[in-house]
Length: 319
Image (tube, rainbow, N blue to C red; front, side):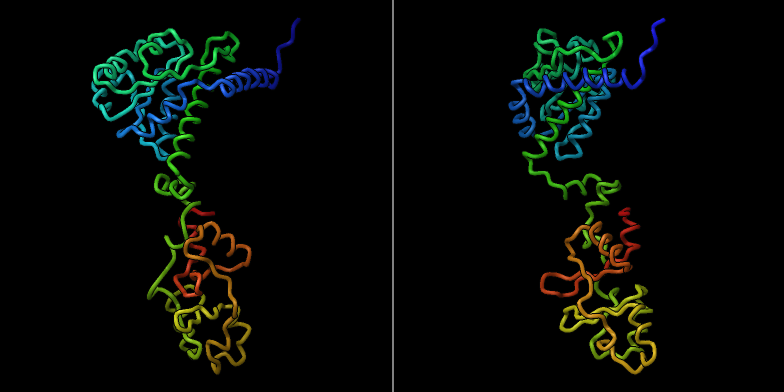
């Protein structure tokens, strides 16, 4: 009796097949890749991506990746396109259609629409002689590699290659547009990426919210300022520059004669600070490393610009 293969052995076989296909595509990228990137960089509208079935799922992912990395893009379902959504595809756009066989009948109306209105059409398919390939202005041909499934029919290798090719397009466009880490914030304001790229300046407290005292402020008045502002710290400031910080620890260390002293006598000199343009995640790291709950933001000249509290970082989703 023949024993069944172990699941891990099957997994390795699948990954070997798909890895080989990706290596083939890497070593022989479609000649049209560079022209396609140039076209998509110049298109005044959006990149419309479409496909049916598994190719449709991949198309939606490619459109989402492009949209989040600086290339306006939208997925259009081919079935819905035939019932009115063709109006989403304008003469200002470019269209990417995905079909492993190149003969997916649901794509026919989108193909005809692009031909009628001279909309650039990019085909992604394995079959160079297919309808999609022949009608496309640019062909990105997938490698002729076997599917990784046991019967050689379920989209596996082909969808992996298409996904990778879409990633290559998106990243090439991203880099050529000069899309940087900071740009992610505009497209991911509610997600982890956006939170990790928030700057201190975007959440720090400023102006009248800051607990500020002078070097010669009596400690009684300093305590009132610390209590009123509610951060548990006070900034000792001279001519706008941060010269020291008073914390709860400083109060405890000077408890015996606290009310007879001035703010400058109690303050800790050379406190930890952060630049307003630093990432909020960096500020959280400084606070955690030094076991403090608040951090003053100063510019290159030492001028006090704001204060960020650990709760501000947590509320913003930086943890």
